[in-house]
Length: 113
Image (cartoon, helix red, strand yellow):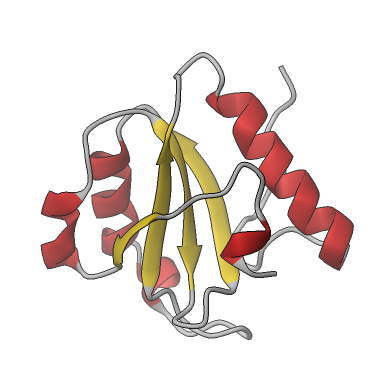
């Protein structure tokens, strides 16, 4: 599934290089790790996008090649911290409806609150 199929759309992005984490804000939001061709590998949420970007860069699994390619882009959408659970769930549901499975790097469904 391509990033542009997410609703609401997400357009802010940086390359998934450690040196680019300085361009990611320290605000809450949802994010996507995607291949060069914008195929979604991972969907997540956080109260600090900058910190979460750095954590993923430190995770070997998130940097390695997957069956769909390797993470090249870090897309993000700034979002109200009280609403990010719902947004992440929406994005994961969209992916699951299209493919019948979670994104390749997501290990578990996000909790429903």
